[in-house]
Length: 168
Image (cartoon, rainbow, N blue to C red; front, side, top):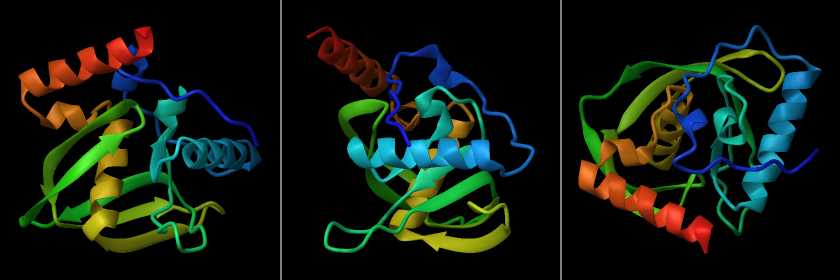
């Protein structure tokens, strides 16, 4: 396993649409292991492959609280099959937009399908933080950042602040 660099705005690769993965093999598992290690070190709760420069439809996530044992999850080619009309606001942040947080309104519940770490198909429902996080990470697969859900002014301010942090 290896730590990878996390891309930050305004890196144009974050706007790429990630490609579908043919299947889960050892090389893909190695990528997911690297992503998980990188996410934990950041620290974060979710990471899409494009955030480490790999435009593949792959996500890792761990929503365990600090007092709980790690609960890593792996998503290959995730798809949202259904989203509730009911929405819920949640204050989001992102490893690719460090130290910026803002409220985003998303569907409160979703049904998703994906392949797991072993390539087995999974279908499940998500709500609460899980629904927020999976939608946030799936946005990355489509070249969308959480700040793209904000007003242009807030988005521009966020990008400027991250550029300033990097320059310092």
